[in-house]
Image (cartoon, rainbow, N blue to C red; front, side):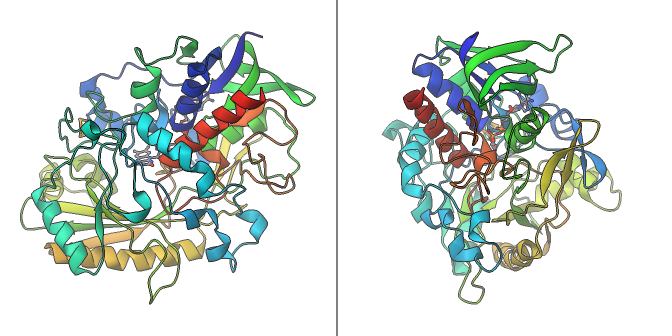
Length: 495
Ligand SMILES: Cc1cc2nc3c(=O)[nH]c(=O)nc-3n(C[C@H](O)[C@H](O)[C@H](O)COP(=O)(O)OP(=O)(O)OC[C@H]3O[C@@H](n4cnc5c(N)ncnc54)[C@H](O)[C@@H]3O)c2cc1C
Ligand code: SF4
């Protein structure tokens, strides 16, 4: 064996698992297809990052029949190097989807084999490792701040003080988003989520765990090392094959796949592994959404400073007049003027796009989307990845209801015009991608067992967002990190 353990993918899940296993003394090789080297200036440039998509998935896939580049991570640290760092715990009831979806799905298609309590110690550990700095005031996003020094309060910007009042006036309960950002060094940039952090104020698995001096001595990392497939022999995975000219083969006692919910099932499908459930690649989810922007007469500050500060959970489980589970809501920054121009149906001058950028404020509602077998990552005859995805009408129905509340809140904040939509046709913004390798108790309905080990195989584990049977009403990264720590501990105990 070349290594004790090979981990594929250095993102939220893979980075955590690799760090944990190496920190426990195992000889770990972490293979990451992306590379470091984007300069701080490039990492903050809208054209470089969001138009030319440097740092994002370099491949183009056939999505609903059309070639598309996806906004999924393709660099060391994975999504944690690009994300908004809102590390929020879900609610305990998120792990009992049958309470909400029994009329839509049979239990075997959504059941979680573990509950919130079993993940709780790992949530705490992940929160400490990622150095969450803002104490949330909401009941199910309560974090245990690692130490008082990091329990920083980031004062609300003037527009957010108004937004906070408007959410309250709307009858809801605003809370400060729990974020893994060290505000003592943060530069307060308007370009945060989707961009690279210029000075590592924002925690990623890369900067907090995998880069020197934090990298454990027994952890070796190879960048620009894309895995093509696994080699198996009976119930054992014997080696990993790289997608390079030499088809390099590397062996290890344990393989942990954590290449994200698109690439992980593709690797397993390419490897021809046994899956009695036929679920590999199925149940692809990335949250349905409601997005509403308000246009104000005055500058909102979104073009100059960091504004993603507030959220609310009042519609998480629906409301008295709309008893349907949905999810959380938060502010999201508009990425920049180029994105405004690219998303409008008619061409507008750059000066107008800049004006809109300065005058706007955007809220997003996140809706837990249903796991559907027809939403699927598969391989074409040429071996290339195809994705078929359409939201269930129930997802869009709930998003439509959420949208009205977001517009109402923005108007109470002072917006003169609001424009919004739901993610009915959204195919590329798959930032919250999960599912595709569902874990469960029954091999007839799940790809992984409750330990996230692939049924039938003794040494193949999954530690990214693919394990999730449902997408939760909260953002996924903290749950993925917590579960990766859990999986690493299981590997430690069992091997
Ligand atoms: C712009 C943006 C904002 C976001 N904001 C938030 C937020 O505020 N809060 C939140 O909870 N979540 C957020 N997310 C989502 C979050 O980042 C993801 O849920 C999380 O990173 C997924 O973790 P993962 O381990 O499943 O995959 P990833 O973090 O995507 O990691 C997969 C890794 O595998 C690598 N890889 C892929 N294929 C291969 C291969 N064949 N061989 C080798 N390596 C491979 C990729 O390059 C990548 O580094 C955001 C994501 C984005 C993109
Ligand atoms: S706002 Fe702060 S955390 Fe975000 S990119 Fe800028 S320095 Fe980094």
